[in-house]
Image (cartoon, rainbow over all chains, first blue to last red; front, top):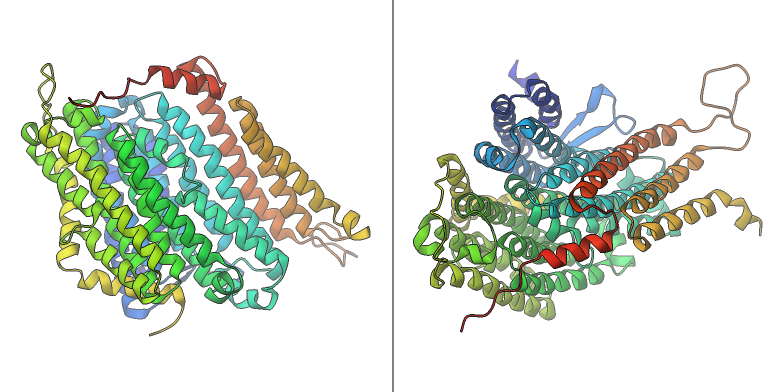
Length: 496
Length: 127
């Protein structure tokens, strides 16, 4: 009967964390809640990989929720693009589960730990739901599920600054979500459908009305707010900088990536390349903003005085690379974006996990806390080094693979200025990574520095796994490249 | 003129939305910001609800003599969005309570000033 069971994979993947979250709340004991979290995310990763294999085999997996046929019912529609995003989200959640146990025990009050796990599961459910669904309104609902849990998770940070960061994110995130809702509403007014595949069929007939143009504008701005594209990035450094370690690692690796997916799905699948990039100069606008993001994010990272803030600003810059690939609207550009989506999730997840280890061992994540790291904690230093070089895009790291792909896509389109901006941004990345390395290698630790507290093996293993996978991806990039190309094909809706 | 007046529901939506948006941006008081955010969301609710209504239409219930009925789907959709809005406002207010406990104020500029004052001085460059 395994055949019938496998047919329900898309729904199972999203519903499992949703069901497990209240279970955590009922169990209340931190250890039990963690066990539920570990089990759910572990099974979730296996399911997402099974789904990916299914997609590779059959192309598109469709699932009608409750047996109601689309376009009336809600449909889950998984192609290579969503499958990739689903694997990233499930994979990060599963890898962070062993890390979470020790990290949460140190950073979150024991009587609230079960709520923390419940929120993490809800956030995961929301992110998976956004990626899985083929219904525009359903996407909005899942977006709000993930956002609301993310605000609460960020507010659990140690410092009171976390509260303000969460509030700012709440205000900006809600405006972004509401913009998406307006866009979806305007499209519904003109077409009478919410199913994305159905929208793509009906939109061309009403394409050149002011209403649809406004819908496109609202959706692009809403999604850009969620993915923190400059100049709508203001919430990101605070949110990722102040959140508890697990949350920073999880959100930095998944939340913005899922928002990029939303933008790509609407631009390429729903509106279609001809409308979004042909009749409106969206390609130029996105390219300009992504170039600004690459440069501004990297410069701001140089001047940040906290490791987590440096990493968060660097995310603002790295998102620029991903959007730059999208803005080309070519097969190669989208492939590069999908590659960087995956690689950056690994690298930044690993680096934020490393920052969490630093927090536990040294007691803080200020740049000054890095002093003498190379001698005090050589393991952490190597993690920082490999991850940092990945951000710069040094050959033999995952960052190089995707930046190389992006550079080739830019050359193919003869876009020289963005190419130069990309090189400058990589040099700026070298400056902020170099600054971290310099402090860690050359500077003496303060005399009165307390001895580093040893950390549980599970946490160290998680950080190492993330970095190791990113290195493996760089050395043997074939399978991932194939997957990224399949994702680009799925987004563009053409069969090669 | 009739098109301007005939589309009055959209004018209400735009006006409400802009008032809400202005309050979010223009005020430092965090509670007022949340009120503005609520107004902003409510404007979108009105957009959806007015989208489904028709002149001389009845409620979408099965009954004798009702030929025209309002489109129920936008109304159902917005029911979900209203729940989301309530959750957002509740979470925002909970955060404001915690912020008030932590900082003793709910004025954003005062909080920012307190943060700037408590920040450690920038590192002195090495000689």
